Length: 116
Length: 114
Image (cartoon, rainbow over all chains, first blue to last red; front, side):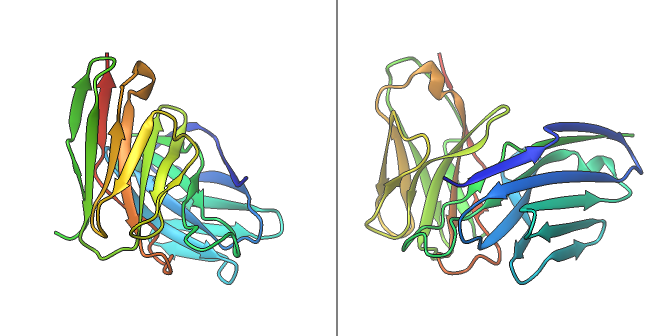
Protein backbone atom coordinates (compact mmCIF):
# COMPACT_ATOMS: atom_id res chain seq x y z
CA UNK A 1 0.00 0.00 0.00
CA UNK A 2 1.36 3.39 -1.00
CA UNK A 3 2.10 5.77 1.83
CA UNK A 4 2.74 9.51 2.05
CA UNK A 5 3.74 11.28 5.27
CA UNK A 6 4.00 15.05 5.51
CA UNK A 7 5.59 17.13 8.22
CA UNK A 8 5.02 19.34 10.01
CA UNK A 9 1.22 19.17 10.07
CA UNK A 10 1.03 22.88 10.79
CA UNK A 11 3.41 25.79 10.73
CA UNK A 12 3.12 29.46 11.64
CA UNK A 13 5.70 31.92 10.28
CA UNK A 14 6.09 35.65 9.78
CA UNK A 15 6.11 37.35 6.42
CA UNK A 16 9.55 37.22 4.86
CA UNK A 17 10.53 33.94 6.52
CA UNK A 18 11.68 30.93 4.52
CA UNK A 19 9.87 27.65 5.12
CA UNK A 20 10.58 24.03 4.28
CA UNK A 21 7.79 21.48 4.03
CA UNK A 22 8.59 17.79 4.05
CA UNK A 23 7.07 14.80 2.32
CA UNK A 24 8.28 11.21 2.60
CA UNK A 25 6.79 8.45 0.51
CA UNK A 26 6.67 4.71 0.04
CA UNK A 27 5.61 3.40 -3.35
CA UNK A 28 6.85 0.44 -5.34
CA UNK A 29 8.39 1.40 -8.68
CA UNK A 30 8.12 5.14 -8.08
CA UNK A 31 6.70 7.13 -10.96
CA UNK A 32 6.27 10.70 -9.76
CA UNK A 33 5.41 12.96 -6.83
CA UNK A 34 3.07 15.92 -6.97
CA UNK A 35 2.65 19.03 -4.82
CA UNK A 36 -0.64 20.90 -4.52
CA UNK A 37 -1.66 24.13 -2.81
CA UNK A 38 -5.12 24.31 -1.24
CA UNK A 39 -6.48 27.64 -0.16
CA UNK A 40 -10.17 27.93 0.57
CA UNK A 41 -11.46 25.52 -1.99
CA UNK A 42 -10.00 22.92 -4.33
CA UNK A 43 -6.32 21.98 -4.47
CA UNK A 44 -4.36 23.52 -7.31
CA UNK A 45 -1.36 21.90 -8.94
CA UNK A 46 2.12 23.25 -8.12
CA UNK A 47 4.80 20.79 -9.22
CA UNK A 48 5.35 17.31 -10.48
CA UNK A 49 8.71 15.66 -9.87
CA UNK A 50 9.69 12.46 -11.62
CA UNK A 51 12.59 10.13 -11.50
CA UNK A 52 14.18 12.15 -14.29
CA UNK A 53 13.74 15.60 -12.73
CA UNK A 54 14.84 16.27 -9.20
CA UNK A 55 14.26 19.99 -8.83
CA UNK A 56 11.56 22.37 -9.88
CA UNK A 57 11.36 26.12 -9.42
CA UNK A 58 8.58 28.62 -9.84
CA UNK A 59 9.23 32.06 -8.47
CA UNK A 60 9.64 31.84 -4.69
CA UNK A 61 8.64 28.17 -4.61
CA UNK A 62 11.00 25.33 -5.30
CA UNK A 63 10.87 21.59 -4.77
CA UNK A 64 13.49 18.88 -4.62
CA UNK A 65 13.09 15.13 -4.91
CA UNK A 66 15.56 12.77 -3.24
CA UNK A 67 15.01 9.40 -4.88
CA UNK A 68 17.49 7.62 -2.65
CA UNK A 69 16.02 8.74 0.67
CA UNK A 70 12.44 8.72 -0.65
CA UNK A 71 11.42 12.24 0.22
CA UNK A 72 10.66 15.59 -1.26
CA UNK A 73 10.80 19.09 0.17
CA UNK A 74 8.92 22.20 -0.83
CA UNK A 75 10.71 25.47 -0.10
CA UNK A 76 9.01 28.83 -0.01
CA UNK A 77 11.27 31.87 0.30
CA UNK A 78 10.26 35.38 1.37
CA UNK A 79 6.82 34.15 2.44
CA UNK A 80 3.75 36.33 1.95
CA UNK A 81 0.31 36.18 3.54
CA UNK A 82 -0.97 34.82 0.23
CA UNK A 83 1.12 31.72 0.80
CA UNK A 84 -1.15 30.76 3.70
CA UNK A 85 -2.71 27.47 2.64
CA UNK A 86 -2.62 23.73 3.08
CA UNK A 87 0.16 22.15 1.03
CA UNK A 88 -0.51 18.60 -0.11
CA UNK A 89 1.92 16.00 -1.36
CA UNK A 90 0.71 13.01 -3.41
CA UNK A 91 1.98 10.01 -5.34
CA UNK A 92 0.30 7.94 -8.06
CA UNK A 93 0.63 4.14 -8.10
CA UNK A 94 4.02 2.92 -9.23
CA UNK A 95 4.87 1.77 -12.71
CA UNK A 96 3.24 -1.52 -13.51
CA UNK A 97 0.50 -1.11 -10.91
CA UNK A 98 -2.10 -2.03 -13.46
CA UNK A 99 -4.06 -0.55 -16.28
CA UNK A 100 -6.02 2.50 -15.27
CA UNK A 101 -4.27 2.84 -11.92
CA UNK A 102 -3.88 6.60 -11.68
CA UNK A 103 -5.49 7.30 -8.33
CA UNK A 104 -3.35 9.57 -6.16
CA UNK A 105 -2.47 8.83 -2.56
CA UNK A 106 -2.29 12.07 -0.59
CA UNK A 107 -0.52 12.97 2.60
CA UNK A 108 -2.42 14.71 5.38
CA UNK A 109 -1.06 18.07 4.34
CA UNK A 110 0.85 20.88 6.02
CA UNK A 111 -1.18 23.89 7.05
CA UNK A 112 0.96 26.99 6.61
CA UNK A 113 -0.08 30.26 8.22
CA UNK A 114 1.89 33.40 7.34
CA UNK A 115 1.46 36.27 9.80
CA UNK A 116 1.93 39.86 8.61
CA UNK B 1 -14.59 27.90 -18.34
CA UNK B 2 -13.25 24.39 -18.87
CA UNK B 3 -12.92 22.29 -15.76
CA UNK B 4 -14.74 20.12 -13.26
CA UNK B 5 -18.19 21.14 -12.04
CA UNK B 6 -19.65 19.79 -8.82
CA UNK B 7 -23.16 20.24 -7.50
CA UNK B 8 -24.40 21.08 -4.96
CA UNK B 9 -21.82 23.25 -3.18
CA UNK B 10 -23.47 22.85 0.21
CA UNK B 11 -25.93 20.32 1.61
CA UNK B 12 -27.39 19.46 5.00
CA UNK B 13 -28.94 16.02 5.40
CA UNK B 14 -30.68 14.26 8.22
CA UNK B 15 -29.36 10.87 9.28
CA UNK B 16 -30.81 8.21 7.01
CA UNK B 17 -31.57 10.49 4.07
CA UNK B 18 -30.09 9.80 0.67
CA UNK B 19 -28.56 12.10 -1.89
CA UNK B 20 -26.43 12.14 -5.01
CA UNK B 21 -23.44 14.41 -5.59
CA UNK B 22 -23.01 15.28 -9.24
CA UNK B 23 -19.73 15.81 -11.07
CA UNK B 24 -19.09 16.69 -14.71
CA UNK B 25 -15.90 17.51 -16.59
CA UNK B 26 -15.50 19.00 -20.03
CA UNK B 27 -11.81 18.26 -20.64
CA UNK B 28 -12.40 14.87 -22.28
CA UNK B 29 -10.49 13.16 -19.46
CA UNK B 30 -10.70 9.42 -19.17
CA UNK B 31 -10.32 9.10 -15.40
CA UNK B 32 -12.48 10.54 -12.64
CA UNK B 33 -12.28 10.34 -8.85
CA UNK B 34 -14.19 11.08 -5.67
CA UNK B 35 -12.28 12.10 -2.54
CA UNK B 36 -13.38 13.21 0.88
CA UNK B 37 -11.43 15.63 3.03
CA UNK B 38 -11.69 15.72 6.79
CA UNK B 39 -9.68 17.92 9.17
CA UNK B 40 -6.28 16.40 9.83
CA UNK B 41 -6.93 13.49 7.46
CA UNK B 42 -5.91 14.85 4.10
CA UNK B 43 -7.71 13.65 0.99
CA UNK B 44 -8.94 10.06 1.00
CA UNK B 45 -10.11 8.26 -2.11
CA UNK B 46 -13.66 6.95 -2.03
CA UNK B 47 -14.12 5.58 -5.56
CA UNK B 48 -12.55 6.12 -8.92
CA UNK B 49 -13.30 5.40 -12.54
CA UNK B 50 -10.25 4.77 -14.69
CA UNK B 51 -12.33 4.95 -17.86
CA UNK B 52 -15.92 5.07 -19.00
CA UNK B 53 -17.68 1.89 -17.96
CA UNK B 54 -15.38 1.00 -15.06
CA UNK B 55 -15.43 1.89 -11.38
CA UNK B 56 -13.28 0.74 -8.46
CA UNK B 57 -13.22 1.16 -4.71
CA UNK B 58 -10.71 3.41 -3.07
CA UNK B 59 -9.57 3.66 0.52
CA UNK B 60 -12.94 4.52 2.14
CA UNK B 61 -15.83 3.19 -0.04
CA UNK B 62 -18.22 2.01 2.68
CA UNK B 63 -21.56 3.83 2.64
CA UNK B 64 -21.12 5.12 -0.91
CA UNK B 65 -21.95 4.07 -4.44
CA UNK B 66 -20.90 5.60 -7.73
CA UNK B 67 -22.04 5.71 -11.34
CA UNK B 68 -19.95 6.63 -14.35
CA UNK B 69 -22.87 7.80 -16.45
CA UNK B 70 -20.76 8.64 -19.51
CA UNK B 71 -17.28 9.98 -20.16
CA UNK B 72 -18.19 13.41 -18.72
CA UNK B 73 -20.17 12.52 -15.61
CA UNK B 74 -19.34 10.64 -12.41
CA UNK B 75 -21.83 10.72 -9.54
CA UNK B 76 -21.49 9.75 -5.89
CA UNK B 77 -24.50 8.48 -3.97
CA UNK B 78 -25.08 8.23 -0.24
CA UNK B 79 -27.92 5.77 0.26
CA UNK B 80 -28.41 6.32 3.99
CA UNK B 81 -26.40 9.25 5.27
CA UNK B 82 -24.61 9.01 8.62
CA UNK B 83 -22.97 11.74 10.71
CA UNK B 84 -19.58 10.12 9.96
CA UNK B 85 -20.08 11.17 6.34
CA UNK B 86 -19.98 14.84 7.25
CA UNK B 87 -17.08 16.03 5.15
CA UNK B 88 -15.99 18.04 2.15
CA UNK B 89 -16.21 16.02 -1.04
CA UNK B 90 -14.06 16.66 -4.07
CA UNK B 91 -14.45 15.28 -7.54
CA UNK B 92 -11.40 15.26 -9.81
CA UNK B 93 -10.44 14.16 -13.28
CA UNK B 94 -7.22 13.38 -15.10
CA UNK B 95 -5.96 12.30 -18.46
CA UNK B 96 -4.97 8.73 -17.73
CA UNK B 97 -1.71 8.81 -19.64
CA UNK B 98 -0.54 12.33 -18.86
CA UNK B 99 0.68 13.23 -15.40
CA UNK B 100 2.15 16.57 -16.32
CA UNK B 101 -0.61 18.55 -14.68
CA UNK B 102 -1.98 15.97 -12.26
CA UNK B 103 -5.63 16.22 -11.34
CA UNK B 104 -8.14 18.93 -12.03
CA UNK B 105 -10.40 19.30 -9.00
CA UNK B 106 -13.94 20.53 -8.67
CA UNK B 107 -14.68 23.25 -6.12
CA UNK B 108 -16.04 20.80 -3.57
CA UNK B 109 -19.30 19.96 -1.80
CA UNK B 110 -19.56 20.66 1.90
CA UNK B 111 -21.92 18.03 3.34
CA UNK B 112 -23.25 18.05 6.89
CA UNK B 113 -25.24 15.12 8.23
CA UNK B 114 -27.20 15.83 11.41
